[in-house]
Length: 294
Image (cartoon, rainbow, N blue to C red; front, top):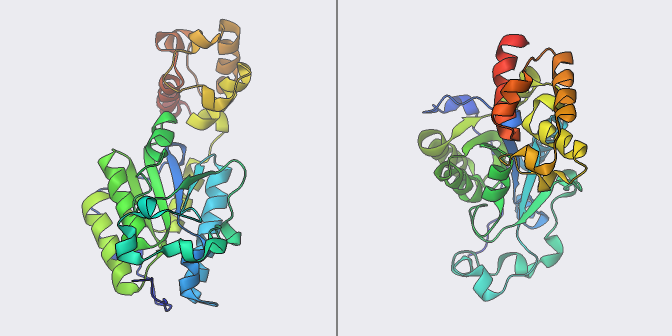
């Protein structure tokens, strides 16, 4: 009923799977979900396990690169104690779980969350169940989710499926997830690539990041942050779909933004911005302008 000890195995490669969709990872529209990389779950791989050591190393590299581009980093972690009611049917399937080892609740040190990262309490297989994940993503205009962590055929796969159900594009990174064995790992990637998402590897994600690296002011998160700073208010209190005039943004500040964009080679007009003065609408204008101006 408990999780078995997990031996190292050769993970499948992303190019072994045929994706039904042809999505391209866009860091300015994405978040990284680091799924259940807690000491409790990682310990089943034992010490000096090449598989999990490689996965942790690749996730750490990916996290650093994506964070540098303003990508939101989100973790899931089960609480150190769950009552019988909170744990529910997980008791029948897996026993008491982390309740037996509350001292191992923390995310592994190599991937420890930083102050500005988000850590969501994990209650069920899916990261979306009884959490604020969907609200967090949609409030920031994020419609892509890169999924890494353990275990591929349980929480990672089901979270990918739930993302798809919410019109959020899941990207499952074949070399940044691990499972009980190679067969289960393959099954998870087959399901995602054929039913609900896009299977790729960390290098392809990093290549996309490099090709789309841009000034923060031209990203959705950077634009939101810049305008919030102008208005002297917390970024999280400035929704991307609200009318900015209602928050006191004035014409001088708008012209300052236009001048900054022009310095980056992106041209939009005061009249264009005035038609729909929201962060989301302005970001869409910037994306259109970048296609012809940069």
